[in-house]
Length: 495
Image (cartoon, rainbow, N blue to C red):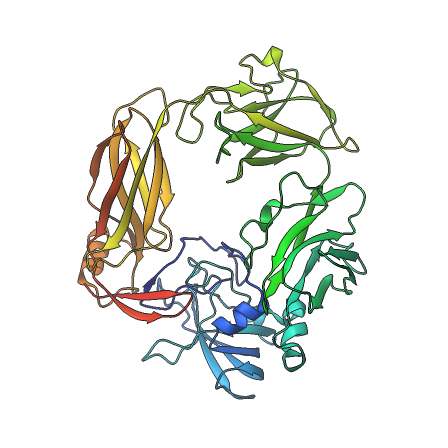
């Protein structure tokens, strides 16, 4: 769950469709407890005591007929609120990552990291994603053990480095040994009954974590790439180790997750040695039975991971459909770089057979070009996490369509197959009731006849013959800066 959207504001957000209540939304790395504490105005434990409803009244700003929820403060770690004080929280709309509430939550307790309400509002809000796109640590009290170990002892451990996290293997998490190897010393800790671990006071520097791992399992290391405070996994290191860096006076969170140690994993590179992102890798039965087996898409380091649920002989294939695109600028390719299925290497896979680790270097790619630019409001303020789309105009034998999101500075970079022609535009969704100060947005909604509408910039026609820089895609809104701190920007539409 993450904070990101306060009623009637446009901010750096992601469009996530949340069908559940409370814990259904996650988009970015979870910050260490210290970071979440420092970035919050208020940190409390509160109990939900009542739900306020308007039965039969539909309003697109809210999920269902609930309008707000009342909590009683039970403990204060930070901020100007007091124990036994009532706090009223606005109901989310079930679309963004703002928390939504229902009757089943009455009586439950929560650890909340909060920003103060916007000026003119008395309603608090719990969000799933921070304005900078990272995961908020607000959660039910039952799941807050790692946080409470620090928050309840801040006076004793303030200023010390901390390494903490969870051991995520159901039924196997308690009492696990974890070894942390530093440049001059090795440290030994154990997980608690709930699988949480922590250690304080390690000198700044590079470390290697070696947790006890049950037979037949291995650490899923890809999830560590975005962890804050210089968390990293080193390619080529043993599969049950994770390396990371401790910074002076800071915390590092390492939530260990595991996958079964069977099947095939590896990395895909282009001819120059650069990792290939978003390449689809399929695992097929060696004898063609007309069925597709499991598949994965490579991450930004070119990595993929596949399990074979049934024992047997398999082949590995990249770009099974054979349609060239900017992500897959090559024809169907079987391992090891052959075009015929009959010439592919056959792997015997299944439970109990150790995982195969592969390195795949593609021999040739179609030429591509890069288009770079910025998405902004008419007031020149950049818009983060807007969608930038390129759609091909002419039908071809390639898939030339591309879609990316802008970064926190509103910048984008698309890679297109050389020679394709089409149109480039920016797009984001506007929801009813979120922009009362913006006539342009309200007029777009009125014309759509719906509670939301996709707003687009002017279409720019392109022929992808050379690299392009400095393109500007502009939305017809003006913005005013409401709040800027070290980690977030919050804007209000005004035009």
